Length: 186
Image 1 (spheres, rainbow, N blue to C red):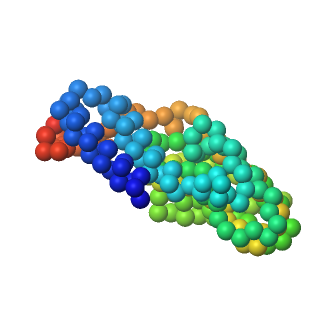
Image 2 (cartoon, rainbow, N blue to C red):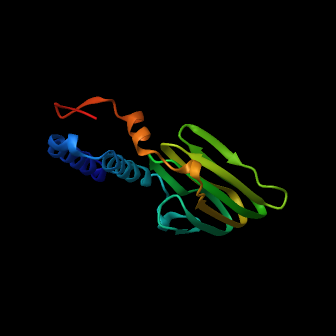
Image 3 (cartoon, one colour):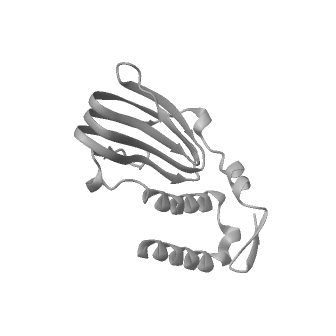
């Protein structure tokens, strides 16, 4: 809780001090700043490494990496990958669930929408996620599960996943705005 209060106070101070120079800020700078704040809030939803049922190996950000678990009757949920962001990204999620007993499944939350990935008869699963701005999380759920889970989440690079910052800027920032009583325009 103290962390959130600190972040909120720091944000207010930064915006207050920077409001005089808002006209000079490049859209990309503001875009990345706001994305950084969203990422801070989004990381709090991930299960801490010490509390995971399995093991996670991140690949540079909270959206990508590898996860594996060898369970002997585990029940619970690991929020493995994801976060909050204003940036668009396309993820490829794939893996394998080897079930001896109980159940394990992959649950995906994309903003308000929650879906469960269905593994095929051999236990393999794969999907592509188009993450627009908001909160996106990939979870592994366990119910008295004995077996193994392996999962990889990686960025899929293509021309459709790039972001036009000028268009992105116009979507979330009105032409005229007020921060701390100072009126600015884009």
